[in-house]
Length: 440
Length: 30
Image: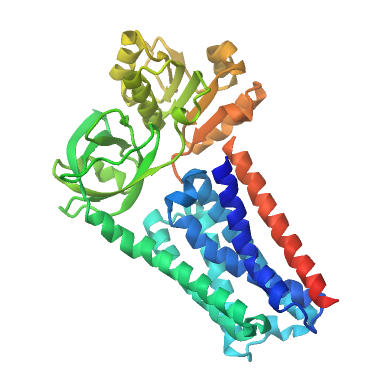
């Protein structure tokens, strides 16, 4: 928690730095209140945009205390905050005596016109990020646009403020602005160009491709020759770029690690054919290579050592991080009591069915596992739970565990959105609910 | 739950930033 708090304080300090420098070196102006508010908003927005690069660069030191599952949503929110501050900047300047032609005129200085362009691009940038799925834009297309617009907006905002702002006549502000821009562009270049190249110097090798059940594949990765596999916690995920040739796409995607860190010499992801890229996952072959950046995420029982009684809730392929946790418990003989509620459409969709059954029966020491399969479209003869996971099933199946257990959910977002309020309603404290979305 | 922390942190950052910008603007204007 201390690590998280220190990162938050540091973040705040950096985005407030321009205001502090202005207060220290260029406090007095002849301008009125609204004009100065508009100025302050723009300076804040620039600092926030700089920190957007830091938040998105997947730097371990930055994201580890929170996990990317929180860092990326925070990045999205602060992008919206910066856009709102920049939308308010021109009307406040106009209201404060700058004149309304700032907003509506076109016969303006070049550095005002590029500010208008920057604001328009930023609004497109934020809009595409917030509504990508709704607009039906492919992740890869969005990411390409994002990677072009982000540095462009930064440079345009820099040029505008450098030329337009009275505060940028002061040397400490000039130094701060140059340092900000340099850090952001260098980090952006490292994230987009240098790191991918470094990862390609240490390619993992596909060791095994195994079909778990129809349209679900486990890919095992062996570390580069002479190197150790990276360390990870059960339940974490990785960014993988597969190099398979044969005309198959080369794209970076994040996949949960389904194996346990206790299994030496390799790690594995279990992937369902579902999107444009994953539909090709079964065509991966032994000997193909992969650039891997890992580990990420905090969806791990080992981070909650006080939680001895656990309820795992998996929807479909959401079983994978939970399987990693269960395998780790089995291999380390962790003393835990686990109830797994595993929801699928049909019996043939159940992944790891035999291994889960063995875990239930074989363990003498280590976790005491109970698995309950819930099928929404079962065959007539299915003897188990039928329908969707709902309040009645959760209350009945969890019973007294509702008052004590820690809940780990990995399901599609709609299922998480329906189950979390039910758990709260059943008096499960927020501190005992942990969940992971399929997507970041 | 983690997302509650995210909401709190986001709200805290926004409030502190807005308060700082407005306070500084006031100081610069008087």
